[in-house]
Each structure stands twice: as structure tokens, then as C-alpha cells.
Image (cartoon, rainbow, N blue to C red):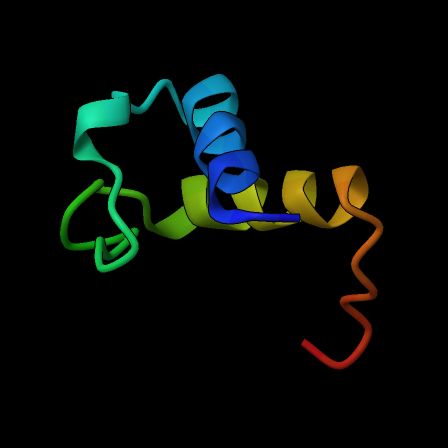
Length: 56
């Protein structure tokens, strides 16, 4: 998986603009993703990309 897959995911799931996404962007500070939105994002990411979150 490359960064473009992650950008596509953020655009689809969070409605982010592609122009706002850079390797340095901060989910909370730059994109306003925090709290329940962050939790839902992480759950969606884990399911889609089969990431084991047991130790998270």
C-alpha cells in the first residue's frame, strides 16, 4: 500500500479534499479528525486493510 491509497481512504471516509492531504498533515490539527471521528476512522481503516488492532 502506498500513500495514495491512504489519501483515497481519507477522501472516501472523511470527505477530505485531496489538496489538504500531504505526508506531513496531522489528522487532528490539519484535518480536524479527533474524538469519535478518529475512533471510527481507525476502525474503518483496520477493517478495510486488515490491521490487527488488539494491542492498540
